[in-house]
Image (cartoon, rainbow, N blue to C red; front, side, top):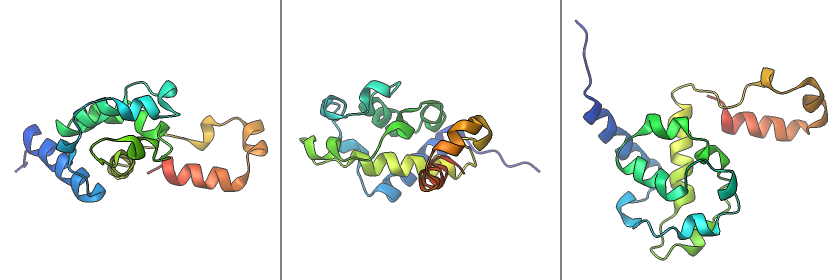
Length: 135
């Protein structure tokens, strides 16, 4: 007998886990855009940080997983420092990365990195990157 889990229940579980891991109330963000305006990585993101928060509120983890925004975030805290509500977006981004990696999705594959780059890059950077971007 197969057990089916409703999409609504799965979305609620995702929102709950993001809240639990980050310690942040997603409802605190009122979508002002200060995070994106102060983010040094925003130009390399495919959707804005505030849109990530809205997707997270809705529990749309698949849409978030398709985006490169959470992987581009350097957790530099520029968003957090400038947030008028004291919302720590970097903690939310880290929580979303952790939840995505728990699904065993790799966002960097060693075989996709050229032999020359593998030789040129510092080993510590490679290890750090693989820890952050692989499940």
